[in-house]
Structures are given as structure tokens and as C-alpha cells.
View (spheres, rainbow, N blue to C red):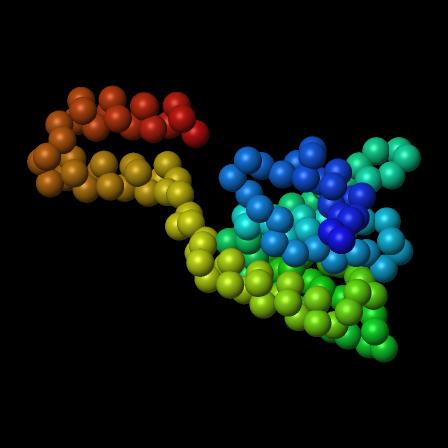
Length: 152
């Protein structure tokens, strides 16, 4: 007999799961009104109720650390990363919490955070160095400078 998927996971799968994602693990909220759903790409706090739904998601490669505390069967999981930590509380079994933390670490190691994109100042500094070296003319430098500044 196949185990029935919780309603929040089924709803998340239908509404928010991307075609290239898979659901890895999930934990139920201690108030039984939401789920922490770990996909192959994101950690999501998902709640759906009478007045709508709430979804907070962070890509796994943006999570900098995972903290898990347990007191008398009550587990608090904090996923640290920008812009703010995601905090989740559950009464699910400790082995599920440990499995979620381990799987999240595996996903983070497999997909490291992307390098930050260069801002306009870095582009302009490189262009200035090319101009100073005689590779770009003053006119070419001014044209590229205008193009870069128009994008930001």
C-alpha cells in the first residue's frame, strides 16, 4: 500500500514545483499547518490555509549553514542565509530531522553558490585599465562606459 502524500506537499507539488526539481524530503510544522519541503534546488517553508498560502524559499546554494536544536522531541531548524534565516519548528522524528540536514548539506556541496556578479564600478575599472594601456581609445572607452551605466 502506497503512503498518502500530505496535503501541503501535494499542493506544493501541483502549484510550485518546477519541472526540473524533485522533492527530496519534507517535515511537518509543529502546529500541523505547514511543511518544510526540501527540493533538489530549494528549501521551502510552505503553508496553505483558508485565507491563502505562504511560500518562503531559498536556493540550497545560498544557505550558508544549518542549525538544528532538539528539546524533548521538539526540533527547531534554522537555515542561515540571505536575506534572513528560515526557521522551522517540528515534532517529527529526530531521524527525519537528521536526514533533512544531511541531505541539505549534500545538495549544498553539489551546487556551490555562484560567484557574485560584477557591478558597474568593476567593469569601469577594467575598461579604464584597457584605456590606460592603449588598448581602447578614449572614444571607445566613453561608448562602453555609457553602455555599462545604462544597464545599471
